[in-house]
Length: 162
Image 1 (cartoon, helix red, strand yellow):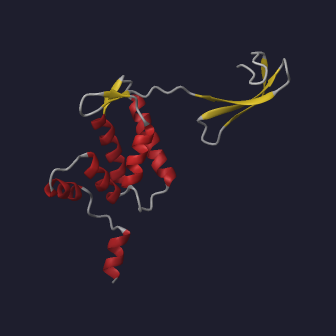
Image 2 (cartoon, one colour):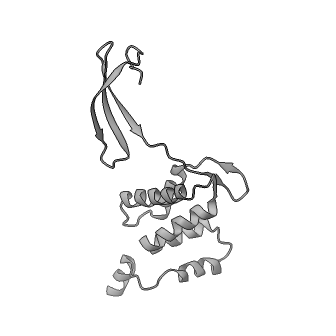
Image 3 (cartoon, helix red, strand yellow):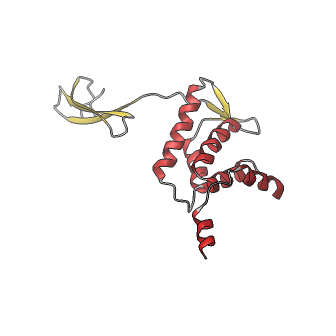
């Protein structure tokens, strides 16, 4: 590790700790040449496969695209942001486990929808309607009917009381 002050690579680790979610190791270092102290973070290098889009083009996986889609589907739903982040982490972990160099957007969408269906029926239908690009109302209704009707959402409960 090069010292940010003098540029030499002669240092020692003074303190080492894991961050809160244990995804990185924080190291306090001291340069043995100039005495400056600085902090570095060590992360595990992850292998996330490239994405094959519907039109056949390939691109680097972008977590923020998945996050934007989920936030849009979960908008105005009582789903904590840490739950959404856990869902994203779970999908990424599943993609890493495939050990594939490339994965299709269909697989990514399927993994997200499996988890969303268990989490929130409305968010599932919202995500499915955008992801599946329904052409007509019948396809949308089929997705709605596909959701387990045993769940009562807060809005349905309010209508029944009124």
